[in-house]
Image (cartoon, rainbow, N blue to C red; front, side):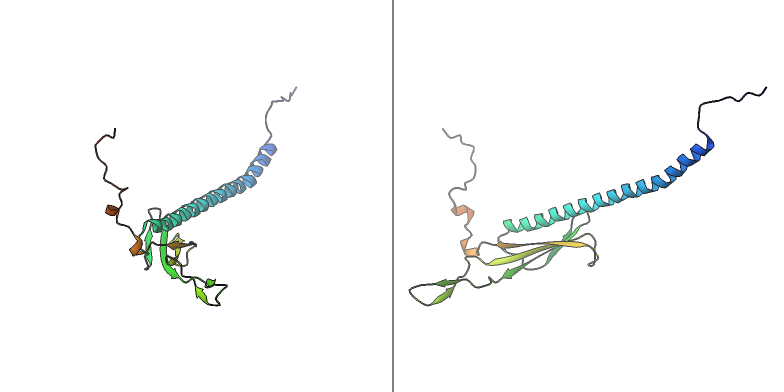
Length: 163
């Protein structure tokens, strides 16, 4: 008598179907994963570039005079930057109108106005992806800059203890 034993397990057909399903789904999952990694890298690069551009614009706040020539450089992460500051003429001209007198006189701003532009590139190639940030800035005129030694509030610290 021949007996057929029944053992728990998978048949060859079931294993082939499982391998086919894995062969179809794994490449799709890997593409999704690598696509999300590329998106994360682009987002990180863009965030670093914007932070660098903001830093270069904020440097203007501590300068006593505008740098009117093109400045450029590269940060340690390989991001290339260029900063240009150009004078801006106020437009449209603001006019003071004296109601008692029909004379119109243009208003001149108390300090000159400058347009600052920082451009960021991720590659040396000028056709590489880039972004720019623009702002307006003013610089104190040289005649209004006060010498620190003339300011009584700014004294050298002393070791004396105040009572």
